[in-house]
Length: 268
Image (cartoon, rainbow, N blue to C red; front, side, top):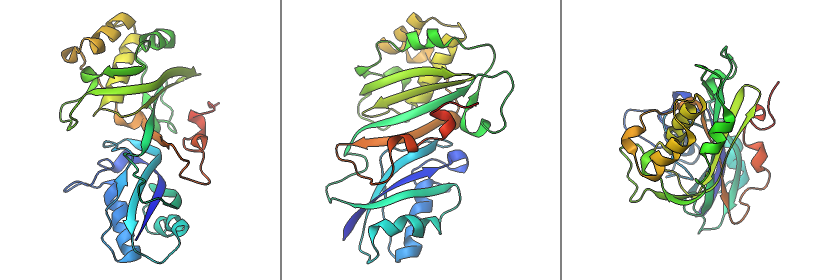
């Protein structure tokens, strides 16, 4: 029996999220079904993060245990031959038995992309939130983020239905930048609450549109004013970029390879 880790990308548009669900098409189900076809074994997979319906991933990490004779680095190509085109395995490696895709992660990185152009871009619509009621003030939005780094209770940004025992988590880094019409919000945290990133972005857009002040934004989460947080950004602008571990698990894939080029270097 060996433990194998995969780094995968998926277009979450037509999936109910990562986690297997009854009467719904999930990424986990597709991968486990493909593993069954390859090995004739019922394999249980574990992911670094449970993305919600419609959310994408450029560097999701999963692991599974399997008793099969093929070399670990061949799982990527074998699975890609079985999986739909909306899911791609970038790399497969054998890992130590104590490695866990979720519990071994130091932090996870999510990115949200807002397209603030007047006219929607057909080629970006699937991967970003087109929002143009007015020009978004990215300087006000960046100012609203001050004070969020560190260990805090983000109860106000947690949607109902969460099964977490605590709403306290640690944001290691959060930053916002504009590249022409695109606004990128990058959050690296030890853990994420259910709906947390989309709720944060929803409130930031209100700041950028000058409907609330940066001070009001801070007050809402700091004093747990959950009832004041009604706006949530749509799923299609959110992407699970990667998970980071103490040891470099993968041999060929680097962090900057894990997100579409336009969202890292900017686009023209």
